[in-house]
Length: 299
Image (tube, rainbow, N blue to C red):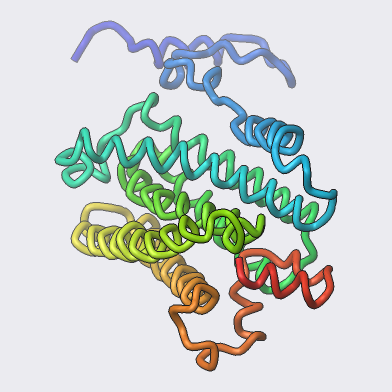
């Protein structure tokens, strides 16, 4: 062992010798890891509010202010997030395939964690938007639970400096969300029944395929990997992976059934309108008339 005291020991000694102040500037950087992390935490949720503002100003301007334009703006913002995160994660998987399979637990890079932090910011933004602008309902509650669970899972990687690539696997579901949000925009804007009927059908079919691959199969890997590595992590992390995986699976099954129903792949008699209501991603339709409600139910 070194005969000289460590930097941390010297810093602790300096704390003991320093006069006591109730409020003081903390310059004792040697007491911990001095990598400047406290100065590198961008407020991505503010960024998403800025994105939403730009979308509000420049998109869907020909639409009258109301529930449908609000929904179009919200889905457009969501599409921007899923496009950025989904394409980045997909490209990362393509370039570092062996790495994402080999080390979902231990690999960590501050730079690579930014896409996770960006998504955490998005889920915070969207959750606040729901709380401020939506009427509380079962559907809103499910979506808030989804966002809270997503923040918990993704924050685990950022705070522990572990499970970064596990979070990448979870974000791979955003590839499916690109098709999901595109489909919603086509339906809401009525382009699916006018000038873009053909494109809408193509998107509908690809949405089903991508949903199975990038949601259900990804979840199979996430749960399977967690099960294989149960002995290599704390039980709290294992619970997040297994219980969280089950919750996301239930949410995705409900969403998948709604998509199959509204796109004509599922017999209407199998699911009632009331059951379909409960599977909606939001409850905007509850504030409008019957005709508009039917439009939103088709999204």
